[in-house]
Image (cartoon, one colour):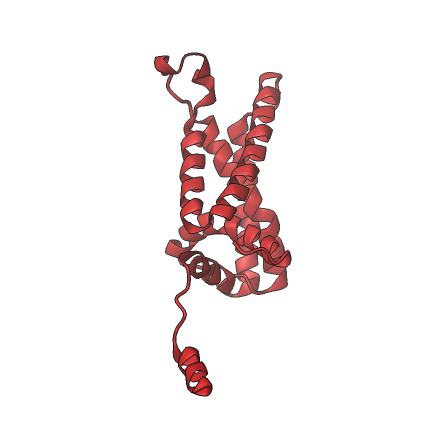
Length: 176
């Protein structure tokens, strides 16, 4: 009777969580060690540059915000969308991404202050980072021998950060 139960359990397909489907698909395109190292570096840089771009787009003055007017920008909406998207997949990963985005926001504010004293303009910095990081990722895909389609490329843009965090959590045997 026990063996019949075990055989039936073995034949029964276990439904994967949506987060696992996303991460498994991402992992298929990132199996070679060099490509993985490239992605460990480039994924945070690309996310940073996208947040920086959104941050630098002029935001309209909204009178009802009062003294908080400068604290809301287009990056606020992008951050809210990302955290919500990740929350639906994995609350723990969304909280970790939020902490990272807080750190990115701090750096972006520092870059804005530097810009006011004559430093580079934030969109220029973000453009340079974005182009260099994406170029490196293209090299990684060449090494991998597998380039994702446009559909997966766009989907991977959002999957990359949680893929990195999931690898860290797996090292510590923390279920996400």
